[in-house]
Image 1 (cartoon, rainbow, N blue to C red):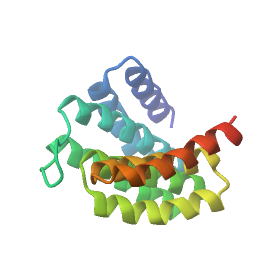
Image 2: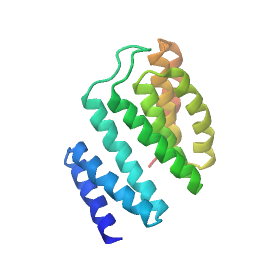
Image 3: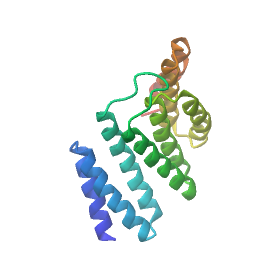
Amino acid sequence: KGEADALSMLAEVYLYRGSAMKCLGYAKEARDLFRDTKQPVKELEELFIMTKASFWVANEGGVPEKKGQKPSPAWEEALQIAREALSAAKNLGIKRSIVAALFGVGQVYVITRKPDEAAALIAEALPLAREAKDDKAEANFEVLTSQMHIMNGKDEQAVEPARRALDIFREKVK
């Protein structure tokens, strides 16, 4: 147990020091140990660290410039890790974790210019965020919605979700 916790701490240290690749290595080791020792909540926490680190790694390699362009293998790995976090969160039934994991998957869809997948995910996630009374997540999904509309060339449709996000941040998120 102690070894997995130490690996997890190293992963976080490297993440916040800007070394996402080192973070991923330690986080994967920690995740495996948490899985082997049947600690699913800690395993999920490690998957969230891996998701964040994988975004940083993928972003270093660039993002697709237009819809339909194939994302780099690093973005495919980021999507796989985010989906693994979503699956773990759903297995645990922790609503806020499900919402957070959906956001991770949604971010990859938006960044890699997959608007249909992003729209379907947002349609699933927004009601869950509201149900969980997670104002910050709700606002973030509104931002993601706005970004998705811009990606689709529907700038006029991007305004309203951006305004809703701003209202939520101003009125509810402290």
